[in-house]
Length: 50
Image 1: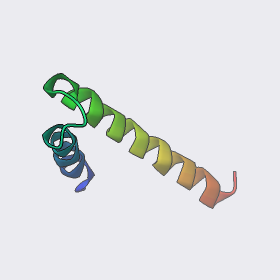
Image 2: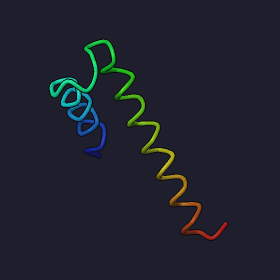
Image 3: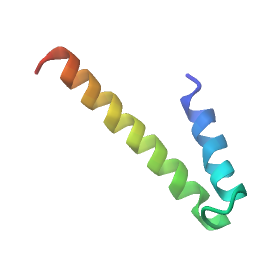
């Protein structure tokens, strides 16, 4: 439940420390979200043994 607000904070934090510009905040958030979904599905696949 807290992953989306955490990803928003992480995206803004990356901008704040100078990792990327203001225009890259939304793509950074999208990358975090898609990456977390991929990890979740991979973990479910591995745990169920299919």
